Image (cartoon, rainbow, N blue to C red; front, side):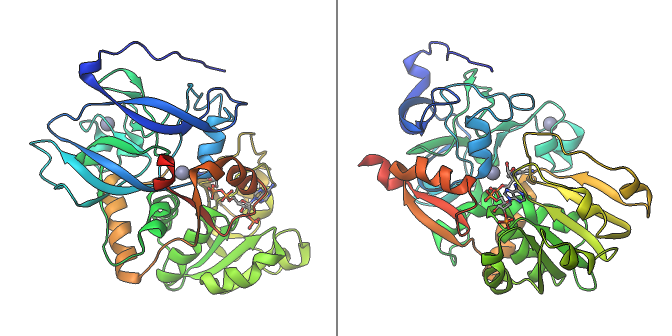
Amino acid sequence: MSTQTAPKLSPEKTRPAKAYGMTSPTSKVGALDISRRKPTATDIVIEILYCGVCHSDLHYARNEWADAMPATYPAVPGHEIVGRVVEAGSGATKFKVGDLAAVGCMVDSCRTCTNCKRDLEQFCENGCTMTYGSTDPHLNIPTHGGYSEAIVVDQAFALKVPTNLELPAVAPLLCAGITTYSPLRHWKAGPGKKVGIVGLGGLGHMGVKFSHAMGAHTVVFTTSPEKKADALRLGADEVVMSKNPDEMAKHANSFDFILNAVAAKHDINAYFAMLKLDGTLAMVGAPSEPLPVAVFNLIMPRRQFAGSAIGGIAETQEMLDFCSKHNITSDIELIKIQYINEAWDRMEKGDVKYRFVIDMASIKS
Ligand code: NAP
Ligand code: ZN
Ligand code: ZN
């Protein structure tokens, strides 16, 4: 476990912000005071109105990803942020005070490497700056996420928010939305394609909406029989109970693409068997434990096993514009920040339909 004490900062460079976070991997999520940088010329200050609750928040802050992304404490999660611009630097011309703005999982990158130049900042060769769990390059202190009253971000990493959508339900698009939209685009979900979505949680329910809107024949794999009606309402053409071998067998060798959004250890080999020749199973779910692969499931017939991470800034804006056009938002349960520990416990049990979103006004109470 990594623990880090924030260096002392000169008050001229920082501003205080109220936040909620964890002080150790086993603490409760509670109120904290954190420091944000004072805005530079290209920064905007966003008063956070709503922040979605992603399973990654829990994996990270409880240090379940100790090997891949060790947590530093205090850990302030939250990377599905929408709010209002309350200050804009002199060079931050993309936004003006009063505009809506959104922030997802990244707040900066090197902007010069090959991948950044291809609008794939999430794969920055020098490591992108994540909204939480990275180091703020301006102050050399840990970045803190959106369970907070405000965030300071370079305008290049802030998104324009469509005005025709219900704002709290837009927040989850910033992670759950782009993380499913990007691989569905990359692997060309569309008419004539059979697409599977595994796990009907925050990511999965967005994957169903996007796959359906893109015109693919969409099949949901779920462990939860009570979610069947919802899956059909969200846009699934078929729903398969993944624990029922007979239902699974009917779909063998038939999928072009399967997107796996499961947050826990499970048998992925059952899904390889669903792919046809040259079909792909892509992981976006990030269980903390390794998933054993029976390689013969890949060798015959030439199947591919892949992964995908969020999406670049340009593609995130494209996704928001797609949502505006197709009237797509997340199905949410709006909560107060004081409910966050119960919300995490419920999310772990799969008891959320389908994303908690924090009404950040509650941080003031
Ligand atoms: P979530 O809302 O908790 O949904 C996860 C779903 O997985 C559950 O609703 C459940 O669906 C299924 N599931 C849970 N435990 C299972 C088990 N033991 N066996 C089989 N299925 C199980 O989580 P989320 O916020 O959507 O995040 C999903 C995963 O994606 C997390 O690991 C998260 O860290 C990761 N993530 C990755 C990226 C990326 O860029 N790659 C971005 C964001 C999140 P059913 O009830 O339908 O079975
Ligand atoms: Zn997330
Ligand atoms: Zn880069």
